[in-house]
Length: 218
Image (cartoon, rainbow, N blue to C red; front, side):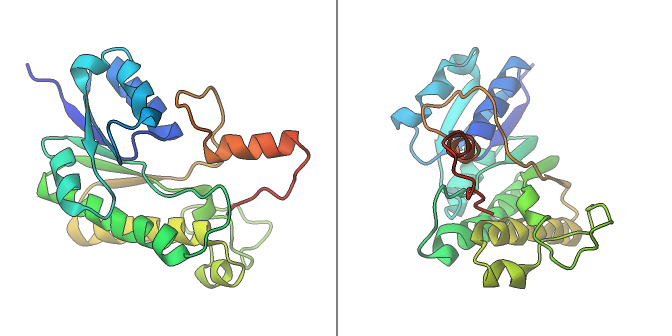
């Protein structure tokens, strides 16, 4: 019996690395997209248990629809984790953050529809929720609360804007096409590192330990 296949975008990142490790341990065949399968920063993926027989790395960029289609083909589920998370300020937010988040999400979802994927899990962020100055302070933030896009622009919170736009794109696509899409909104993600490079959340922890409290990139 052929193993069920799932795809994880942004395979070399912190969240995706742990997810891939878990999926392999559960017996799935995993397709992971990375910018360069031969880059040393992705070497840890090949060392996971069962990776040699159950992990395939695909060279794919979020803006490259055809390569995304190749990675997603044959998969029953897709975890869309990839999205730029800048450790510092960005010079061109439209190109560096907004386009990969919005157009990239659209490309992934279209590829999922083409391959008749059963379910897509889109990893958004708490940044798509919390930057809403008009939200009542005594009201719990829930699915109806979104970061205010104009507020994000005026305060130059480009990452929050990119995640708000990207998640909105995913929900709209789901409602329009019927594709089963679930979004999750994690906050800071900390813990043991599998990859060789420091992820954005861990970098915040390092800054706090050094006494720098002006760390929020939202």
